[in-house]
Image 1 (spheres, rainbow, N blue to C red):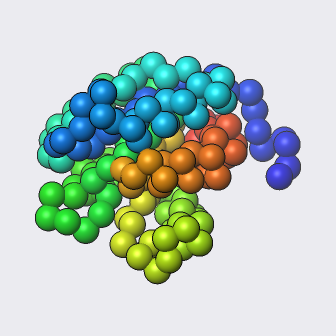
Image 2 (image 1 turned 60 degrees about the vertical axis):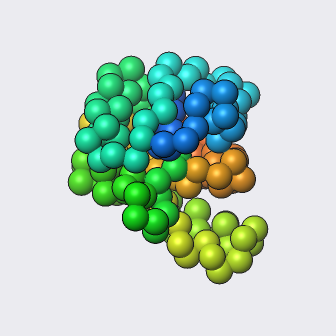
Length: 162
């Protein structure tokens, strides 16, 4: 990677868990994301759990982007009738990072086989902020955070704010 593409960026994180059943005590995926941000010295400044409802998901992204420049939504990215995170977020993105979803599925196939194709993980830029929509399993968030988001977040935000 060419270091002249990367500029110092203060990263602040937002976590939005999309679920109708999880609570702060049972949100193991949200907790895992928080742990990974903490271990990477990225402060988590926003955390909410929201049900699978397009309007409520959008309300949370609007709130999160006021304080965070790296927002990770987990859950609601599958194919069931109530999965709507992608439908809520995709129209709001200024630019999509197509390679994120492609790389997430590519990495996932090693762990879970061809069922990785069912993931609709996406990422993009909204108002100079990086937004990632990933599956809600703890294994999936660990993979996305450790292998894709954390290694590239400074690079992504450097480009997003040029």
